[in-house]
Image (tube, rainbow, N blue to C red):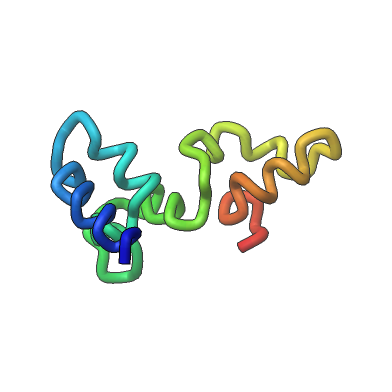
Amino acid sequence: MLLAALRAVRKYLCENTLYYNVMTIQCPKTCGRCGKNSSIPRIQIRNCADKSSDCNQKKDRCHNSAYANFMAQQCPFTCGKS
């Protein structure tokens, strides 16, 4: 119940130009930016599965043994783990 209340409080930030990108990444469901019927570009939809906003720039680390576990946790969609 508390989580739902917090989502409602933050929902107004979904269309705020200062918070649009961060809300798209951190709260895609709250902002209605997940799924096939979404009007946002595919690159943003993929953030529905990734936790980090810079996964695409770090994609080469997905198969690097030093970063593989971290990338699988933070960027599962980009690394093909979702």
